[in-house]
Length: 124
Image (cartoon, rainbow, N blue to C red; front, side):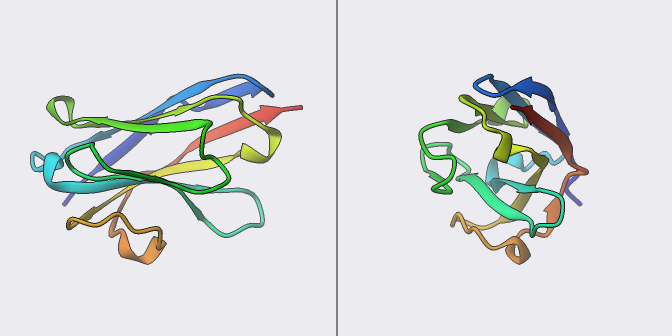
Protein backbone atom coordinates (compact mmCIF):
# COMPACT_ATOMS: atom_id res chain seq x y z
CA UNK A 1 0.00 0.00 0.00
CA UNK A 2 1.42 3.34 -1.05
CA UNK A 3 1.02 6.14 1.46
CA UNK A 4 1.32 9.73 0.26
CA UNK A 5 1.65 12.84 2.40
CA UNK A 6 1.44 16.35 0.94
CA UNK A 7 2.88 19.49 2.49
CA UNK A 8 3.67 23.06 1.54
CA UNK A 9 0.23 24.58 1.10
CA UNK A 10 -0.70 27.96 2.49
CA UNK A 11 -1.98 31.46 1.82
CA UNK A 12 -0.21 33.52 -0.82
CA UNK A 13 -1.07 36.75 -2.68
CA UNK A 14 -1.79 36.69 -6.39
CA UNK A 15 1.44 36.58 -8.35
CA UNK A 16 3.23 34.72 -5.59
CA UNK A 17 4.78 31.28 -5.46
CA UNK A 18 4.47 28.08 -3.46
CA UNK A 19 6.15 24.70 -3.61
CA UNK A 20 4.18 21.62 -2.70
CA UNK A 21 5.83 18.35 -1.70
CA UNK A 22 4.51 14.81 -1.72
CA UNK A 23 6.40 12.22 0.29
CA UNK A 24 5.75 8.55 -0.48
CA UNK A 25 6.22 5.59 1.82
CA UNK A 26 6.68 3.11 -0.97
CA UNK A 27 10.16 1.77 -1.57
CA UNK A 28 9.22 1.24 -5.20
CA UNK A 29 8.40 4.93 -5.58
CA UNK A 30 10.68 5.12 -8.56
CA UNK A 31 8.38 2.76 -10.48
CA UNK A 32 5.25 4.88 -9.93
CA UNK A 33 3.69 7.44 -12.22
CA UNK A 34 2.83 10.43 -10.06
CA UNK A 35 0.36 13.23 -10.45
CA UNK A 36 -1.08 16.35 -8.86
CA UNK A 37 -4.80 17.06 -8.82
CA UNK A 38 -6.79 19.89 -7.27
CA UNK A 39 -10.34 20.44 -6.12
CA UNK A 40 -11.93 23.84 -5.62
CA UNK A 41 -15.11 24.24 -3.57
CA UNK A 42 -18.13 23.04 -5.50
CA UNK A 43 -16.04 21.73 -8.38
CA UNK A 44 -14.80 18.38 -9.57
CA UNK A 45 -11.28 17.24 -8.78
CA UNK A 46 -9.15 18.07 -11.81
CA UNK A 47 -5.79 16.99 -13.13
CA UNK A 48 -2.96 19.52 -12.78
CA UNK A 49 0.26 17.75 -13.76
CA UNK A 50 1.86 14.33 -14.06
CA UNK A 51 5.34 12.89 -14.22
CA UNK A 52 6.76 9.54 -15.24
CA UNK A 53 8.97 7.46 -13.03
CA UNK A 54 12.14 8.70 -14.67
CA UNK A 55 11.16 12.33 -14.31
CA UNK A 56 12.00 12.94 -17.93
CA UNK A 57 8.42 13.06 -19.16
CA UNK A 58 5.83 15.46 -17.81
CA UNK A 59 2.32 16.57 -18.74
CA UNK A 60 0.38 19.65 -17.65
CA UNK A 61 -3.16 20.91 -17.76
CA UNK A 62 -3.47 23.91 -20.05
CA UNK A 63 -4.54 26.10 -17.14
CA UNK A 64 -1.16 25.75 -15.41
CA UNK A 65 1.21 25.27 -18.33
CA UNK A 66 4.11 27.72 -18.13
CA UNK A 67 3.42 28.56 -14.48
CA UNK A 68 3.72 25.23 -12.66
CA UNK A 69 6.58 22.75 -12.74
CA UNK A 70 6.36 19.16 -11.58
CA UNK A 71 9.47 17.26 -10.56
CA UNK A 72 10.52 14.28 -8.50
CA UNK A 73 13.47 13.05 -6.48
CA UNK A 74 13.41 9.27 -6.52
CA UNK A 75 16.26 9.05 -4.02
CA UNK A 76 14.07 10.93 -1.51
CA UNK A 77 10.77 9.31 -2.55
CA UNK A 78 9.39 12.80 -3.01
CA UNK A 79 7.53 14.68 -5.72
CA UNK A 80 7.22 18.45 -5.99
CA UNK A 81 4.98 21.03 -7.60
CA UNK A 82 6.52 24.46 -8.00
CA UNK A 83 3.73 26.97 -8.51
CA UNK A 84 4.58 30.44 -9.80
CA UNK A 85 2.45 33.40 -10.88
CA UNK A 86 -0.40 32.10 -8.78
CA UNK A 87 -3.91 33.30 -9.50
CA UNK A 88 -7.01 33.36 -7.28
CA UNK A 89 -8.51 30.65 -9.49
CA UNK A 90 -5.67 28.34 -8.40
CA UNK A 91 -7.24 28.25 -4.95
CA UNK A 92 -8.06 24.62 -4.14
CA UNK A 93 -7.10 21.60 -2.11
CA UNK A 94 -4.17 20.00 -3.91
CA UNK A 95 -3.76 16.23 -3.87
CA UNK A 96 -0.91 14.04 -4.95
CA UNK A 97 -1.71 10.71 -6.53
CA UNK A 98 0.15 7.65 -7.75
CA UNK A 99 -0.41 4.76 -10.09
CA UNK A 100 1.56 1.78 -11.27
CA UNK A 101 2.40 1.77 -14.94
CA UNK A 102 4.30 3.66 -17.57
CA UNK A 103 1.81 6.23 -18.83
CA UNK A 104 0.78 9.60 -17.45
CA UNK A 105 -3.00 9.85 -17.45
CA UNK A 106 -5.25 12.69 -16.41
CA UNK A 107 -8.21 10.58 -15.33
CA UNK A 108 -8.77 10.61 -11.60
CA UNK A 109 -10.09 7.04 -11.49
CA UNK A 110 -6.81 5.71 -12.91
CA UNK A 111 -4.93 6.67 -9.73
CA UNK A 112 -5.52 4.22 -6.86
CA UNK A 113 -3.29 5.98 -4.32
CA UNK A 114 -4.01 9.43 -2.87
CA UNK A 115 -2.72 11.78 -0.24
CA UNK A 116 -4.94 13.67 2.20
CA UNK A 117 -4.57 17.00 0.41
CA UNK A 118 -3.10 20.39 1.24
CA UNK A 119 -4.94 23.71 1.00
CA UNK A 120 -3.66 26.42 -1.33
CA UNK A 121 -5.34 29.81 -1.09
CA UNK A 122 -4.43 32.67 -3.42
CA UNK A 123 -5.73 36.06 -2.38
CA UNK A 124 -6.59 38.74 -4.93
